[in-house]
Image: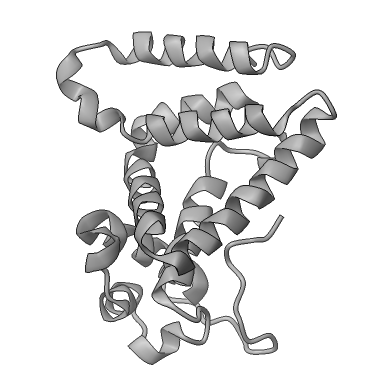
Length: 195
């Protein structure tokens, strides 16, 4: 699996801020926050750089483009939840994380990136690579019984969960929504159970 926090120029020392956070991670967190606040089209590399405490040209030491940075920020956000080894996450744990309050900004980021992927071919290509990476992880973990169709439906289901805030006026309780989502996961992955 490709990691999200990789400096593009090996051999250079990683710069840390006063809190000990490396520049690549600050850039990813700043890009995610900017995309959530302004939307994909509204993000500027200057805004991301200011938030990260670096110069705008310094962004290019790590990422070739805004699209590459924002998709990497999406990967970074997703790789952080749920806790533990990303290659051992159960479908149920992923769904619980997607529905968690702490993932609200990441849900918005996922929506922004996937909508941008419909308008920008470079974003679409980066998202396709990301999806393929995660599909390979799921396939390797689950063995031959897991079909591409199942993974595709699961990914589409997760993207749908990213829209949950837009349905807030339907007054369903969060615990009921989570249980129904887990019921759907059990249909897709009967061999996994609801761990």
